[in-house]
Length: 278
Ligand code: HEC
Ligand code: HEC
Image 1 (cartoon, rainbow, N blue to C red):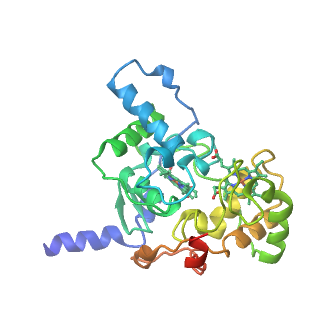
Image 2: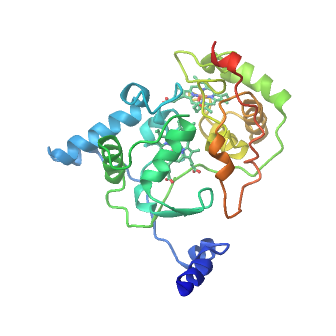
């Protein structure tokens, strides 16, 4: 028992990243496997149902989604676009130690993180049919990717952090974003909300300024990406992420072993009950 505790301490030290740096991870090109590659089978039916959930999350799983987003609202082109938080190759990188949870997360844990935070909703039963179908589709999107490999174009191209100005950001929002996201960030038929009661909650990755700025710089406006300067992206990200949005009380348990990033300050005002009833 003592020995086991000692081993755990060694492994959990700051960090497994030291270990990760020592291990050369294979890197593979970005390749989207086509569902046509799947023969007619129960596997294919499960993968296609999983894909349908990711594309129409709210309509598929009303009890688990607490806002107006779908998984593909942020994982663009249904998670198939490189440099836009693609799911191509994700499955192959799990299980994975994550500092936010302080544990080794399974892909199911990661998916439920986005359900609870990005979708401001409730976790799926890890062994239920919905989770199984989503995981089957994500596993299919990692076809041919070696376990643990990095995929080119994974995640987001990260910008160097800059200090954002919410006043300038409000101007960017009004002139560039509001035509799709609405004057008050409430969403329109063209695009989902960016703040308010129907948006992601304060515990979401997108509620962090650096993540939001990198995302916005890389892919927004959706019809004219890379149109904003890095400074404008930080300004508008700071504006969006200082507007009210739903709280996430379980945030108090995040980063239990330290390593909290600077932009995860959770300073955002939770949505008031008055706004909720609107
Ligand atoms: C509000 C935006 C947003 C929405 C909506 C969203 N996510 Fe995410 N998701 C993120 C962010 C941000 C990350 C972290 C990306 C990074 O750091 O590169 C992420 C990461 C992930 C990952 C890990 C990817 C990897 O390669 O490590 C998975 C899997 C995932 N999300 C699944 C989902 C699912 C399933 C849904 C719907 C239930 C969903 N996401 C909805 C923002 C979102
Ligand atoms: C031409 C319309 C359009 C414009 C202009 C636009 N967006 Fe978007 N945006 C979208 C669409 C559509 C999505 C969701 C994509 C999907 O569901 O496939 C989206 C998604 C997002 C998301 C993630 C989901 C969410 O709503 O939280 C953020 C954040 C975002 N946009 C921010 C911005 C910002 C900031 C600007 C201005 C710099 C901007 N967008 C301009 C259409 C637009």
